[in-house]
Length: 416
Length: 138
Image (cartoon, rainbow over all chains, first blue to last red; front, side):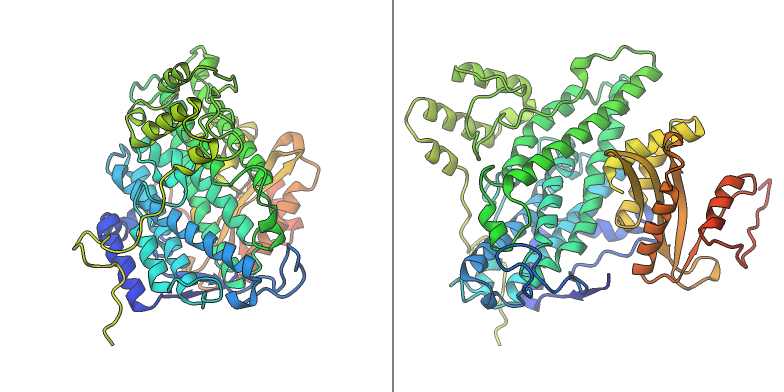
């Protein structure tokens, strides 16, 4: 289980630290409070970690049983192209989640919850750093004209609204989102990392076990505060209610499902040896796991209600929304489906319904506005479903992204 | 062991001790998950968690610098006893300790817990050259 650690070349390391200064200003607080909240834990290290002992042969795909590739050029071009896209998307999620968490971190009403999220953010920074290591330590010229410096620049230039996946383009409404995100969206991350452990590209596969070990705590950072909140909700605490949590679950669950990709696709990624499960199979397992999570939370809530001799109202218990509810990608994209799976025929009625089941603060967001406008155009026949799905924000281009100056790039290459 | 095992572990503990202590097990699970999530183990029967064993490799305690696998909390649902689950949990935990470089495993047992002492003895644990001391009242 030994690991080797790497620092990326100085221009990239400096770029990440400069990005941190602007996007993750609370980062220094972690080392200042580490001993209090994580006593005797290994200090945090911003570095790439590669597990040394992983199987030498590819476990899945058309080349299963053959040696894993050590360089992108050794991969089939199609596999290398997909892999590069996966690494860039993975990097986008890591940096994107930090931007989301940072906005509401200070609103935590419990110091431990806040410091747990702060640690999660630092570990996401490390995961992003790990992806930059993979992009900059190998020659991708066989499948991309982009230079490593431009790939890194593009990743660091993304902001909430311009990331690759929709879940990372939603702003948080409150600290409830920090916690629900860890429980639901980091759980998708766990699935992706687990599937990517099977990758035919050794440096990528060997990056996954250290990331997965950290991801386990990210899930606990979501579930344990939720467990305590449902207990507080049962005790009559007016500041947190089951309805608040349910609306937040409704906001995030569909975004999590969409992170797996289209339900009916993904077989080609398995055949190329990049992952060991197709999208639909992984998504089904995720749904089951989320269901178990909510069952456990409901048990905790019911026990707390019983302890007060209070009557449990079934309507108060948390439920997973129907997988087709509030989707904008995948097979059910832009279908008007209720949280219980019931279909709507009238767009105005559906929009009113969304107003009742989504968090109030989220309703006024750019994201909901875009969804509703797109849905209305689709229903009116002004756009096709393909156009609707494609209308989600696209990547920000590189250049001028650092707030220090309109002309400064994140990555400043050595003059020498 | 994952964060989704906490509720089952809490219920097993309640069946064994008669006390429902979710906060205690949330804190303990969080500790092990953040330090070494692959270490602590659970046993499932038909998809239900019926046993758990928590521990980790540490070094330096009490002047014992060698990496030591510490077996710290375990429990098996009374309805699932007699299926060698404790043995299998311990074997899995010890295998992980070896993988992490430990060459010794340690634990402590109260004198009154003869059943646990007997289980650990059957699993190869012997009295160590370490004397537990206490000061009571403090």
